[in-house]
Image (tube, rainbow, N blue to C red; front, side):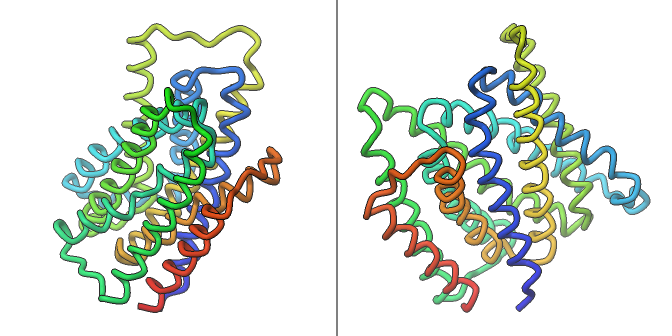
Length: 287
């Protein structure tokens, strides 16, 4: 058992959660799309600065470049916008809970694309993680007015894209094992997609929004760090091992939301779902 895979996956979960909780501050001054137009390019700039020492371009494989670029169109660009809109309407806890049903999609596609077949014990753990997340999401959803329930489609769609990207990127890493190269190309494409969307919709940065810009730049650093840790973990381990651990980020979101925003609304069903999630991840690791 390579403990580094789990530590990197857990680190990705922690930074995803931190970025989600900090988003509340940025959305006070900027719209989701304008905020994403600052957060995603900040991540790209971070990877661009470290590329000369972190990426070996002499071993570059164009098939992998195409895969990473295609993945970058959807993640983090589309997922970031969906999460920001969902966060503004539903809050970080529910966005995190519903948005991270991604192991279902990640592992399903990993079976098809990579032939990764979980053991019977790992399947049990995966089901437990997903069940716990559903319980957690339902606990948060009971506080959402019926008129806003349609917004639940946003974090669910985000979960699909985040999950689908994991086995696709893993496929690219098998061709060109450069996690930093994958992150650089992914964020390049995402930055282009978001700025094209912003220019097409004509959204502008409101005056006096310096604090909001800085918040979204910090969010970009969090999300970028999360993505590189996820790609490093995928480069070393199978999707079936990485995805369920990253799926713990809604639990970390709840903890950080309580510390930073003072949210103490977790119900008994949510607490029980959290315990099931943790137990499920332990089963996956041991399986």
